[in-house]
Length: 244
Image (tube, rainbow, N blue to C red):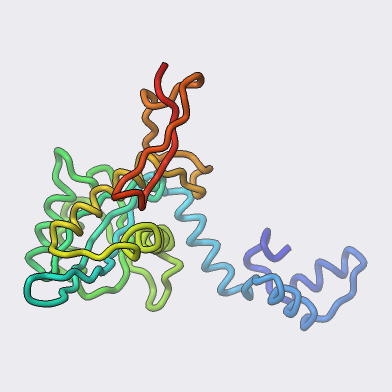
């Protein structure tokens, strides 16, 4: 009842159960919902509204975020900030850029490139989900708005509102970045490019039915021999059938 009726509080559920011949106290309903991880009505209503919005407009929504990587340079250990954009409908990811200095000049250039009318990733998107990182400045958001992309800011300390982006960060960290030591920015950029290619074309995704985002029909044949290919020295591997 709680999942199917997101506005129903404890007393409303008690009344519905009483009509069915089950007499319980509101505290019993509260304890049962808590045991099964179901929030009270106000929080449940907000969460359901957000999920409904994402399902309805997923094809027009992208999300963006940063993650950091430590890189050894000739002088010292430097933190590089990598910006990416993920399509919520397809889960396709574009690595936008990586830099040790993600200042406003970098961010404004990113906004121009991503909304370019020819090959900008956000050209067909109406909404972009962002957290409240100060790197997403007011000028950056205004430039996106002028290109027709509305920015949706997540509430403070609410990573679940940008769950797809957060899940990608976890994937690239655990499957690639945490397993490697980077010497120079070139090695990091190489790894990011290889992982993005693997993520988009070679790795199945449970969030979209355990299929590939960009399947390569030429690489699969029902009667072909199964082979294993890899990237980044074996850190990333995948299997496919050779064409007959």
